[in-house]
Structures are given as structure tokens and as C-alpha cells.
Image 1 (spheres, helix red, strand yellow):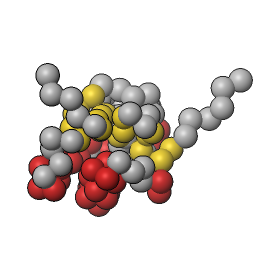
Image 2 (cartoon, helix red, strand yellow):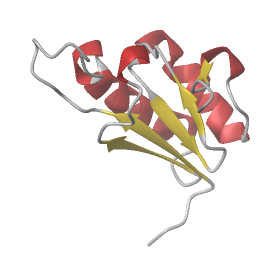
Image 3 (cartoon, one colour):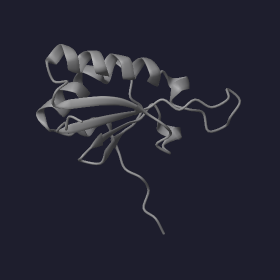
Image 4 (spheres, one colour):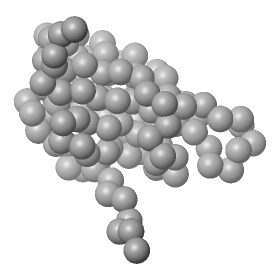
Length: 107
């Protein structure tokens, strides 16, 4: 199995339309995942960065969400307009600070 420097996990979880939590898929994440894969391929970055669909990342209220590893940062409210910036940042080993969401402190 090839190892990549970085992984982008795009939540594509879909819930029933009447579920109060909503879901990332309802916010266009399935198309985001496709666009992100295409952007990485176009940049020639697909050997270094892999975009994958994932199940629920438990950040439903700020979806669509993308988790970047190994930095372990979550991007929230991601739209198609953000795809190229995410691909560029991941390829360069950077974090796209304007999209970073941090969970509330536990306690």
C-alpha cells in the first residue's frame, strides 16, 4: 500500500433529510470529495496527498467537513470555492488556517 505524506478525509455521511443534526452530504460533500481528488490530480499531488471519503467526523453543525492528517486539523463549512486552496495547502504541508475549526474544550 502506497504511503502518502498527507490524507484529507472528507465526511460524506448522509442522514435523513428530517434529521435535526443534518449531514455533510446534504451540504455538498460528495461533490467536494470528487473535486478535491481532481484538484490534487491536476496539481500532480496525488502521490503525496490522498483525498478519501469518510463516514461521520462528528462535526455535523459545521459541515461540510474535511480532516487533514497527520496534522489532525478539521476544516469546517467547506465549499467548492475552498477546494483549490485546500489542495494547495495540503500539497505544501501547510494548514489552511481560515477554515480550521476547533472543538470546544471538554469539561
